[in-house]
Amino acid sequence: MNVSSSSSSSAYDALTAPPYALVASPLDYYPAYHFPRASLLSWISDKDLSLLMPIVIYWGVSLIFQAIDSAEIPYFERYRIHEPEEVKRKNRVTKRTVVLMVIVQQAVQTALGMYWLDDEDPLKEVFRDHKGEMEQYGIWISRISFALLGPSLATRLLRTCGQEMTKFAYWWAIPILQFLWASFVLDTWQYFLHRYMHTNRFLYRHIHSLHHRLYCPYAFGALYNHPVEGFLLDTLGTAVAHWASMMSTRQAIILFGFSTLKQWTTTVDSHCRGIRYRSCLATTWPTTISTTSSSVSRRTSRSRTSRTGTSSSRRG
Image 1 (tube, rainbow, N blue to C red):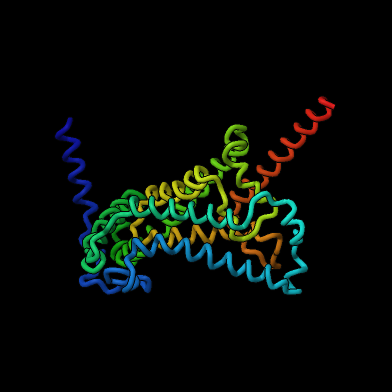
Image 2 (cartoon, rainbow, N blue to C red):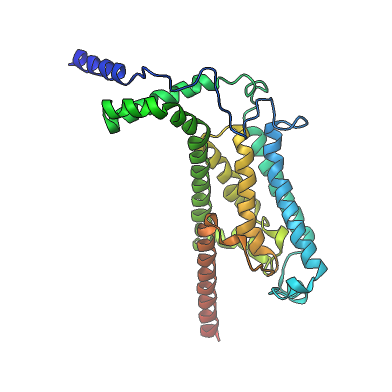
């Protein structure tokens, strides 16, 4: 029985082993994003750049909004929701405290990143065996093609465009799928954890309510959270997404940078003291889950207010 199974497997491997080159030798194509050097920038390692990127993007975008807010430009003033007097009256936390708490969270996320990300060999990208890795992709492309199309059609397909299929899979399809999967994992992680923070009374009262002390929020207050919430929601969530997608440290630069930009469209943009643009970035697809989370937050708050009002009337 085992001998028959082994023979069958060997025959299948022999059938699907490509008698044609699925990888050019030498390689004749490199995408525009390919940089065969130790680091993207000469003055900073990829690891340090991936940790610096979220901080630069967060404060850069936030300060732009803060400048617009402070300048009181007539064009933007038409879209203001909360007036400065209302912000001072309703917020139960000072801007100094908000800035300090955000810095604490970013310090924690940087510390975890220093531990989490590999100190990759600086020469790894320089001497990376792309051809060898692509040949492994070619084997799987060949096997899948034979399984789905049959020997005759698969052979014609692979002989005609096998190299193009392998190049696309290696340089574009897999990295894009990794990125989309990481985004899905991060959004899912943050949605359910944020939702649970609102539905669990203990967590809301002792942890998540700290975030809502910023009743009339502004841009750089988006990460104003309890340190435990900041660690679980953003820092750990991004680490889990990076791990689940099996991204490299260089890919992490894009993931961490984009996740911060996405955070701007969902939190920084929605925490800018009511200033709104006609074409708001918060309508892009990655914000759907966060928008839903905000609606859950509003429903939970209304429900809690309703219960509080009922209790007060009974006491009265």
